[in-house]
Amino acid sequence: MRNSPSLGLYTLIALVIGNMLGAGVFTTSGFALADLGSPVYVLLAWFVGGLLALCGAVSYGALSRLMPVSGGEYFFLSRAVHPLVGFVAGWISLWAGFTAAIAFAAVVGHVFPVFLGFRGGKGVATALGAFIALAPIATVSSAAVFILLVVWKRYVSLASVIAVGTFPLWAYTFGQLGWMTMSWLPVGIAGVATAVVVLTRHRANLHRIRAGTESRIGENLEVEER
Image (tube, rainbow, N blue to C red; front, side, top):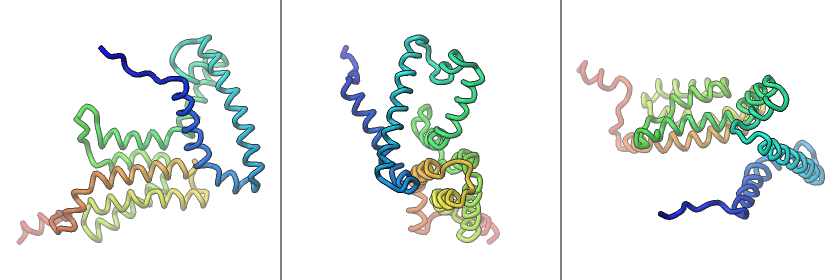
């Protein structure tokens, strides 16, 4: 039996560097430059942030050797400081750091369920439930677009695709206005990814709309009345 390939030291270093460049430098440098006003200050901020991250990594490594149990920061802070500190840290990480990714994961899990052969739903209702907790105003605005398009065109599929596609725009707009409780950027990125998934799942519906064979709301009722 062949052994499964393992990740070497250089591969792991490359993964960390790629994650730092992709998730850090490329996505936040523009915002940092706009706030700090000078490339020198941006580089200095990155240097200080790197030192803090290094201290955190060393601390996590030491805690992992002392307490080799799974649980992450919640377990470490609960044992090393106080259970309440671990509880608060866990909720802050969930709300501020991973909520948008979790929302997108919920949509993907609904659309491509592993236990159903990756054949699930369209993802629209799941996206509504996932994102309304993160950006309620943006989600309600997208829902309003959906209702208007359904009343106008009577195509649920077309209204779903367009409404989900407008969500990142609403998130950006309301984020710039200061009407969101969290940063619009991770929500917007998750919204764009969700829109791509929803569009992919509705390709057949859109082809039928172009061919004129897609059913409209109330169409069967009109045929029966005739």
